[in-house]
Length: 204
Image 1 (cartoon, rainbow, N blue to C red):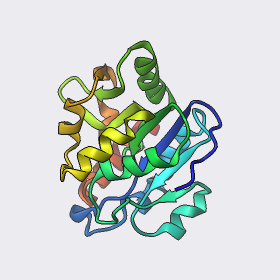
Image 2: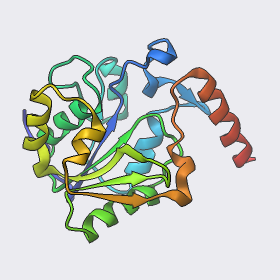
Image 3: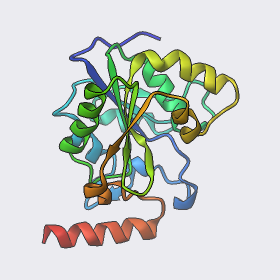
Image 4: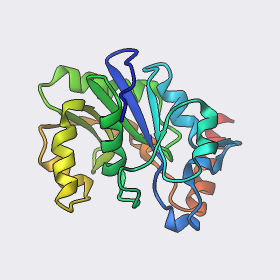
């Protein structure tokens, strides 16, 4: 797989490769939120940070390509979870750091992502993961790209769980207890409606 030329030391991948079973298997990144597809919100948050943005998706590639960024499928194409999408991104980019975020959290801002990057840069750790004050948010990461080989070995061993892999890394947890609401994600149409109502009220 050819590497992308870096525009700076940071690249990013948006995870949109899940099956969304609780949303009637709709492609969540393409579901509308306040009049725009969910995928458009993480793109907006990332464009001020890096010019190297990847979309990890296992279907609807042509629709995702409309945003003008490379669209990648999981290496094995089995909907193997977020780690599979992250691994494909690690094998594609040519930067020192990879930012990771999901497609279904439209409240995340560039400042939130910069907080992750700052924590990674200030530490000697290899991964910085967001913590909302109660629990780890394992798909909000800044990670050093030499981890590709480690992750490849983990997945080839039949493992898939994000938490388990993160426990094996040099990990710094980044305190987002003051911003816990940004991790509200969309797993059902009911949750989508609730989040739209709340976001609409805030805008009003």
